[in-house]
Amino acid sequence: LRPLDIPEEVVLTQALRSPNLRDFMKLDGFWSIAEIRDNGAARVLTDHLGVKPVYYWAEHNIFCSEIQPMFQLAPAPEFDEIYLSNCIKFGYDYSGRT
Image (tube, rainbow, N blue to C red; front, top):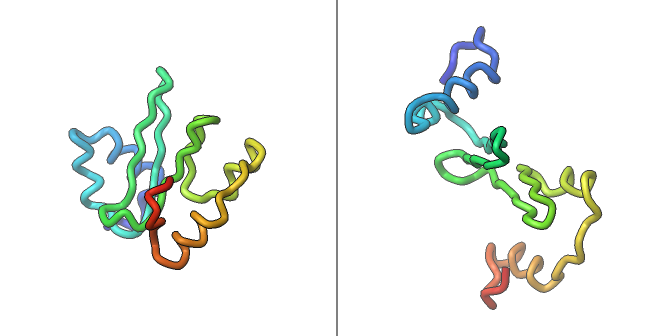
């Protein structure tokens, strides 16, 4: 938990700079963060339980915690309707496709 008088971006910046990202263990809730470094490398983090998803669109090198905003940057690809329906119904695709 953080004191209410400290802005969220300050808390996150401190956590990103902490040794071995230790300060992320102090954060509570559902969150995901993508940090793009000056050399183009990315560091992607999510909450301890992995509740908040992180999506990566390799073709366009886009990270996002929600799918819709990615399509504002690039046209939406064709989706595999069977794969998506399996994920919605069962929580995964039993055929092994990704």
